Image 1: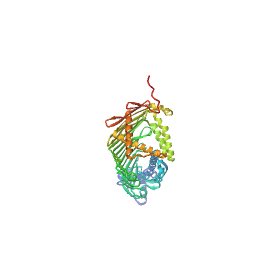
Image 2: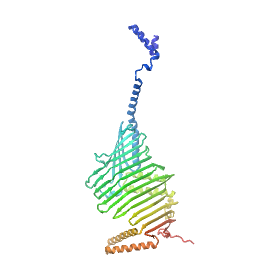
Image 3: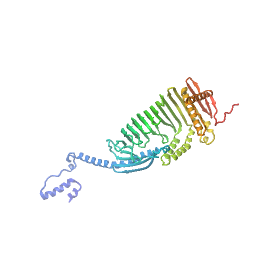
Length: 522
């Protein structure tokens, strides 16, 4: 009995107890192992530790990769909703979002509406709005098809007005990879395709498009790059439109007051447009557009630069053009408020006319809030190279000490505006532009008199040319006499300043009809 009680506590005594019973029954005499050898590693099967670790590892992998897709699915859904919110905050009208989440994946469908501008009403063939559907298939991580780790992969098809934007056999790719940290990388690949003309649709030779968009988890930083060899469109109202290589680079980050600031660059190698009705061809080469914005404290400044390597139109060739526009001293909180208000308006499903009115009302009420910070607007550089010489210009306008009450009555705000401007134009170009304007005014007067029922004697082409030349010469002579323009070699120059409600041009005070004359000093 004592051995039975002790056998419950030790395998050694259990063995001796069993041995005693065996001896009594069959004469079994095999010795029992000593107590210190019962749990000895030397007595365990070879590879015991490796097998146990392998079993544990298999169990862990089953748990991790079995439960992980379900766990990361929630985060993947959150990132998808964040991406849709970015579309909404960008002004898109998101009419519905459906998301069906499973264990290893999900199906999502988002409906977007983009109203066309009011001018579209004048074209019966165009719809009043464009309805896009984003049909997405999500595959949950943590493993991705590319061999790495991530929360999910999202493949998206785009439908326009319920129909696939691309043919079913067209290998378009729009894939978003959601990283474990929530960051996203969207890959766009549209192969080249040749679409023959059909009905009113012109023939389209699309040469492909590829792009990549990277964003962090909170979409506080977004980098985008798009590249395309261009397209060739022929037929219809456009006889031919040729678009060359185009690249778009954008890098933005969330800054003060939640504004997305940064830079964007657009480059186009060449563009050619021939209208079927006019027959004239517009040719443009080396188009470059750059936009920059940054913040210092609570003030935002920005600039936009436009460059054209060469432009040919109407038989005239301009060998280069440059324009830079800047704005400064803009309050970031006010700009953020304007942006939020405009996005809210654009996201509402209202008539285009009403939407335009709402946007105008917002600007009228919000823009004056920028005045206390003395905002500036300037054309820092204007250059156009013509066959007859270069056109140059600059302009800067600033509001100094202006407040909202200055705009609410009278002309008091004029005294708080400052402006400086200068323009230089080759005299031959100035004469040509003056002749065009004079000819237009003469033709308009003839039409008006005809509409009034008057008998009009139309001059012959030679008489009309002589009349236009005489009027143009007289206009230029008057401007030179009044010193509104001055002649510098082959150019006509005008320099103007505006201070305290007084306009000075080339050193001469020019009275303005809407302002009282200056008071003579005693």
